[in-house]
Image (cartoon, rainbow, N blue to C red):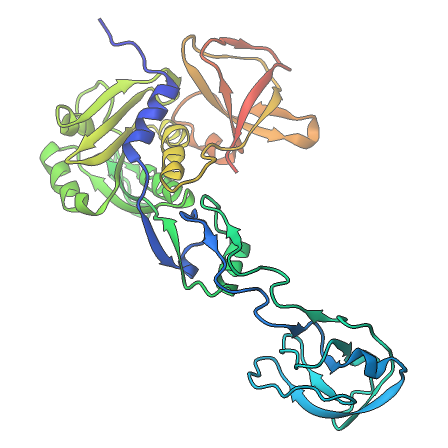
Length: 399
């Protein structure tokens, strides 16, 4: 009796469990873009760290300019970065630049536009209350404040905050390292002449760039031949350095299924998942390393990556949200779907034309050009076999 088909959610959980969670390490702050903070970040210093000027102008005592216009002697220039600043004496002004420390005794800044710009004596044309154009120490962040919670994805603004607080490195979940295998004796590299029966290799490139787009590190091992001994010889030198081996092709029921032959009985299970495209799948561990084996047709491989591998990679780095953004849309045309299988059709979604999604190309798993112009996947549940034009469907954004 044939084995029952595995459910999509069941296989998603299987793959996620294999990849697991990446360890925490401290990376230089410039290398943390797009990663997830692994520990709460506590401010070791205040921001600003000292009272400073918010304007180019003149530091004054507010009471000295209460009867403006008034002319005062300029006792000192204070550029940004100056570390030794003389106190401001009554009846004088210091010329000061934006970000420069406020001198003791000063309580306001008059911006240069309201003066004659003098360097020895300055005409101050306006009165200002105390506190004008002064940035107070800790006005933004107090010492000991929780500034970023664990689990926060680190973008430019978060890295800027950490840098302003003096952090040279941050604790993050490291990127998973993935060995991507392109198998098949029929494969030829782009730019090489094709002989009869050969095709240009594209799955490896597609999957390796997908790993990188998801935040992982990918090493692409191309043109592994359809020979079990050669297959093992190709991958085993890399196993100590990777978290996941990701293959495409060689997992079906025919002859010369090298991935299936190489891993069967060695910790990797091959099964069929109730989905179209992408039914044949493999998952397990080989010599302690996670293995996910995807089908070889390009659309099957990419849809399988989207449904199973990409969420597992994101979860391994500590992302709380691992699925693509979804929406509900009305399908533009009638279509059918196989009973008992979740179908993923390529689609073009246009929110501006009434939130309508149009299937792109047919359901065939070799139609790569349709995938290239699609911006979403249309998800048809396993219990739905027919859709009429105008029916609501769930879409997964690909962009």
